[in-house]
Image (cartoon, rainbow, N blue to C red; front, side, top):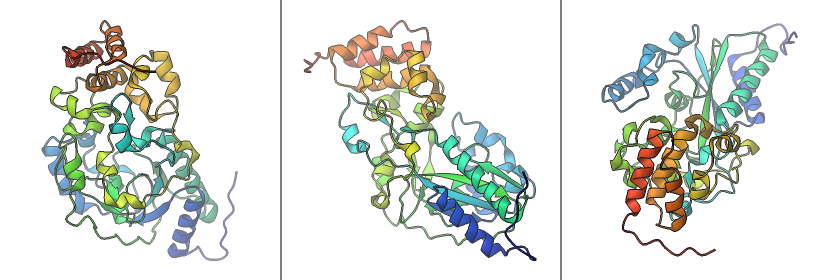
Length: 367
């Protein structure tokens, strides 16, 4: 199908095209659209130092792409502009983090993972935005990304004026906090770049102080190997014992540093129905989730970001949470039911969890 162009004798100006891109981006559900150039040299040394410190842990892909991560045109030749989008994901009707953490028999799952997998949602809409640009100017070079390639998302978003990188290393926006996803279109279009915003963290260190495992080792310095999001999602083997008690009931990700951030009082509920929570995942009962067999797990997490960890690590994570839960007959019975699980990974964490309840009197459970 051929695309008609909307301009007459002369091609549109970069400013006009940028305005059209931003307006159409909003109509597609993006809460903000900005444009960055491709100069990431200011971030290059920080990335190298972070990798050299080993803070990436088992995330080997962070190191293996060389300069493609901080030189966009090395990843996609001829890239000279990056369109960066923000999409808010905080559902309006979820159990507050603080409430969940006070209910140790319930599962605390990172807010971003309660609904549909954001990769699919953003990628589909980014593609539609690129196709709309084609209707305005004809074919052009581009590639769409959503956390799917060696792309320095937060630096690009910072340069595109979407916010600043906070002390917890997440992007912060004065009007939206940090509960949002990012996506990018690398393009060969020469578009006017947006102005970066200034840092507004000031002397605040709430995110650093709240971290259960002290993963934020200094302002703007995250040791991923200590981060509960890394431990429950990226780490494939045993969770180090020193982090199991601090994990509490967090079975997939951790939002503590975001929940405590003062800027998130300005966060707006998402406009996207896909991000509404699934009833089984928001404040789900740990014992119930732990008893899911693999077919049930796959069915309940279909189209969800959670599915990527697989049933084995799902059980590993919940076993730790059950080890931290109040001692009840149901908790003990659920753990014992998995003592002979085929997976050594699951068995090890179940064994640790049961050991946490040894000598503890089982509480009387009421209906």
